Image (cartoon, rainbow, N blue to C red; front, side, top):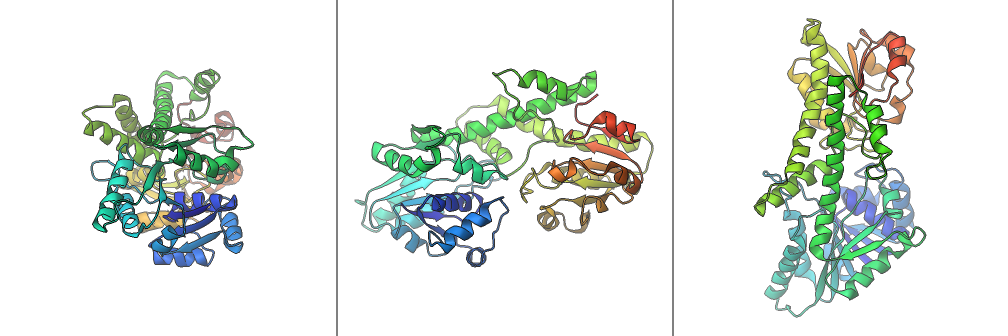
Length: 443
């Protein structure tokens, strides 16, 4: 298949590279001159395990091309994927200016039948807006007779595991309004589900658009639910790890997304919850569970920062004399993404109380420095961050943090106090070694 991928961001790069890996010819278009120049030289604007190797291989073998020339990409391709950003607007709704801007440009270029695939995460009704934008430009050109189809094909990629998610998807969702287009989409994705037999679900456009938001909202709700229970566990003396086990072994619930922590973050869950809430408001409806999920996630970050602040206040220690070591800045491991990361909000709360912060993250320091500047100190490794620290806050569960040299940690720290935001350490062991230990929802 000849495919034009419009947008060389996270979704566009992963999708384009994986489609090329299966033998398709992919032209990846982006208007950012510096990004395209870097990609042509082998540089990547994002970190994703395995992505660099796939891109290099397919560029070398001529199946993947990077360009700023959208017209050339569209003319040479049957399918045009829109994979541009949909950032949150001031009211929380998804800003569609980039999606509709691309649609208008497609309308300026179209000369024959094409399939326009919405890969960006977009609210219900966007396919109609994309169709209208293209049709409007075709009409202005006197070419209203040219046929095209619009498809909704939401992505379900987890940062840090995106290649595996795309290559072996649990399901593929295609929203289409005719059988011909649906069959072409099934043909494109058939290599990815041939061995797993996982389903390609064909549905109407609006249901496909809503499926992505519904999935992310449910996952966010599950995370916020266990986080709220963790707070209750601390109040009543229960252990959230045991409660999770009791819940997760119920086949109706399952154990995934039931790990208590300092809140969810990233480019998807927070943004999609806000967009879904705004969509419901636009239709005169309040999604009360989603509202509660959003509020609970905000509270969880405040709760974790509050534990640190309260500990030192209770001991009547001047907060301006405190240095907190932070392990983990990204919203999850195996990514350099700090968007909506709990660590950023928690650090800001500590800074607002006059506490000094020294942070380390294997991949996220450069992006954190762009955001936080010189308001915190940055360590070259996790142990350096501990030197003269009054406490350690573990916020992102990178593997390298899970089995550290505890004796060295204690020697480096001024006060051996640990706030384990991911419950990765054994509380009994930590206390036996002389650490003052606080988990999330643990007695």
